Length: 134
Image (cartoon, rainbow, N blue to C red; front, side):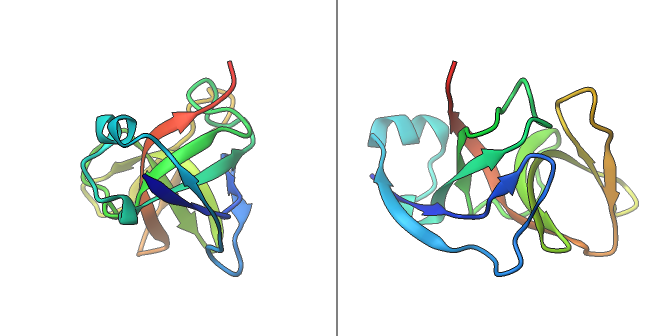
């Protein structure tokens, strides 16, 4: 199945995405493999490369993540999400708090957590899979 690449420079610590997503190329992934990750129609899937080490050991610098754009609201706690805060794109774990704010956390224990409030966080989609080096 064809999936478009999105050049978000998704920094695991946060990268500036001033001009938003730029579609660059199309890659082909086995349909059976994609169906193991999500039932979402491939037109709502994109892949992007990560940058940085704040999500280690889950994600490493240069990993390819598959993002399900149809899942663009935090409805699953502790999942990994592609988000943007003030034009900085990142891949993080996100928890919805009862007060309407969101806790944003890295998997790397050396990186502290953050909080997003008052609509300052935009959810691009849920990260549903990855490809990376061993």
